[in-house]
Length: 139
Image (cartoon, rainbow, N blue to C red; front, top):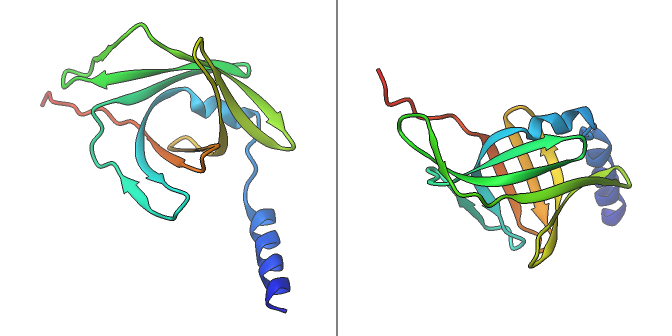
């Protein structure tokens, strides 16, 4: 009986969760900072301050991610490196597929809104991003 109740609760939660649509993928564009990382063992690491943020540029199921260092004057430092990705949909789930000369890896897009993005890698780590808000050092 307990297993049946657990299964029903799981199915209800699954049915009640909002699915990501193709139009939601446009929210990927912009500057994001990691808020927390959740590990498979249940532990969480929170990030109050980030010295590096991720800039995503997305268009028609492909894009790139670039590491940026925000400055107090509102500009950014960066290198010429960028990680290209493609987005594919498998069984209603969106996957970000990264590929470079050294490796290939995937991240499942769990949630995306205008202010929040969650991705999960094959190792089970969930990266919770929040939209980056620059520090304005000018009065």
